[in-house]
Amino acid sequence: MSVVRRTDLIFGQIPVQSLCFGTAIYSTSHASSFQFSRVLSFLPLLLNLLFSRYLILFVALKRNLEKDVEGDTSGDYKRVLIALLQGQREDKSADVSADCQALYAAGEGKTGTDESAMDHDLVRAIHKETSGNFRDALETIVRTALNKSECIAEMLLGSMKGLGTRDDDLIRLVLAYSEDNLEDVKRAFAAKNGKTLGEYIRGETSGDYKKFLLAIVGK
Image (cartoon, rainbow, N blue to C red):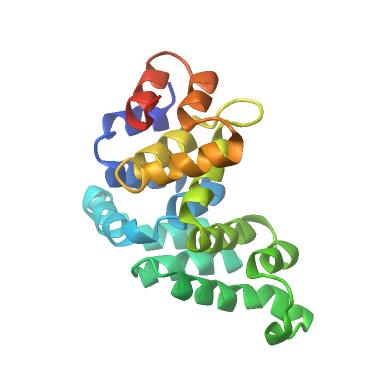
């Protein structure tokens, strides 16, 4: 069992605390740039609590979430994550989309395109004109603002598809939404994939790990 998975199971009843430990681990790993966008950008409602709890948990190490993000990321990707941390606002779709529009302008805007004349939606524009972690973060923010449950359902599926299950992503997503519209996420998952989340988890996990997840999401 990985360090991340042990940490998540230990703090399974405290989702935000688990996120703090996960973020701290990612900030010292080579995989952190991908994980920061997953941990931070799809949780606008929890950012305030995440920020303060992170400071409390790691005060002895003099760790600060914003400083860790600044030190571990760069360029436009760093800008969007810092904007999220500094915003710490309520989950308002219009505000989030407006911020993404402004941030993404550094990409499509550089090509000389008049944003007021764009005839395609913001998600398509972001995908076309940006790349890498910056694109992942912006797409996640916008898609969450437009349809949060569907976006989380897609993340859950992505954590279980392909060669091997990304256990850390799967556990963190399940924990983060165990007390926040999990039923909506489960409905969106079933509608999109033709199988329930529980059925998918049963087929992709095993042992006590599977029992732990199914105890949260149901069968």
